Length: 114
Length: 116
Image (cartoon, rainbow over all chains, first blue to last red; front, side):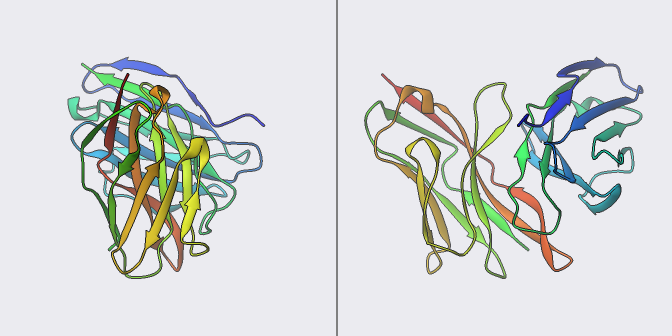
């Protein structure tokens, strides 16, 4: 079974631009979560989507948004990029939300904001 | 609120010697706890998880962890380190949201170095 895939793997943007990251979960998994990893703040939860609905949200500004499609693929969007948004963005999938299912992570998208 | 504290930011061992990575947790209920590993420029891989079954949990690559409620600890151990174990290790607790398991809360990570 294929793992979680994320595209693109690397991205360079400038301040003020917006960016869209994509995540395809493991086949059969309906929950997708997004995390931000930075050297200063570590790994922080952004949001979780399940059945096309945002189920849970972390403490990030409204510039960070996401959505999930009927095939469970998810996209994350960041508008008006700031230098501090430079990070590794990780996506994780599990069978269903609200359970003890293990979350499986993709390789991440490395975003650099100049 | 749930939280985890990894007591060492960096641990260095020699190949063939035991590994101990320490983690304390704080939770208002019976938690689900995990250890994930991240190799350089890679995503996170699950090593093992505890979900209120046996307190000694065996994971992949010879790692295991023991849940000790009285000490609120979930330390990761391995009897004999291998060069390929060099990576960053994260202790993680599952948050409880809306009456069910929610997002993951990560510790700051412990970087493990293995000397030949």
